[in-house]
Length: 275
Ligand code: CLF
Ligand code: SF4
Image: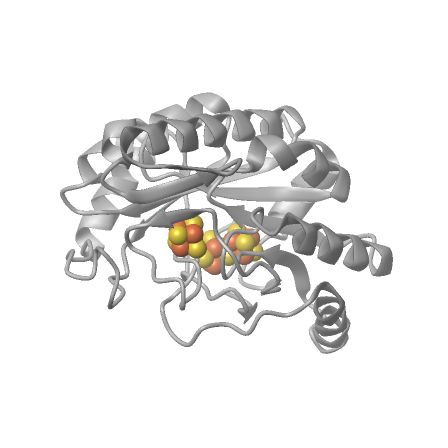
């Protein structure tokens, strides 16, 4: 339901290539300012980008907020259709929140109109949701791979929060609580929320409609069901990726509940251009 969002946010959503599947004209640019992460997903190897939203490959070079502004100014000059600046790692965008917030502040001073987007595992969302809103972030993606701590226990090796390391269902319960609280807060603020789900065969595939139902009830706008990209050296290195048919079937089933993304490119943390 679109009626909930204000006019400005609606317009930004239409021009957002990830939130509007029909939009092939507008470009997005990622700024890799967030190096670290506070959780360990079993499908991730840190020397690559965050598999939240990235293709395993050559690791992205981290840039400072000042360099990010420079890069933005450069790209903006040559790319007239640039509509979105996103922060998507290569770690978690909220783990190094100083870098993220400084980058967004610098760019906002330079350009009052560009859309701000961010992708996170959600652990730090309750802490930073209000500030994201104040910074002018209008679109946020949270990767949620389970809404059952026992299932999460098989997906996350640990979760580090306020100086304590959790594992097993305790880790899963804490992460889930923060993800849902954080989403709730963002939605209250009128921020458009997307949930990414990585399909893990035999681990969460049967549970995906349950995740979708939960985030739909919270008021999320769109869901992106993505196949795992098995990364060498990760815990899930040998887990087979879901086939195109399996992904389509899940999207069809979940599409009865909420809008689906069909055109995700599982971008790197420094991707620039149209989808
Ligand atoms: Fe980047 Fe993500 Fe914003 Fe898009 S990507 S932070 S919502 S601007 Fe888009 Fe890339 Fe898929 Fe992400 S195609 S991986 S969904
Ligand atoms: Fe890796 Fe991203 Fe998971 Fe952190 S949240 S462990 S960077 S995939």
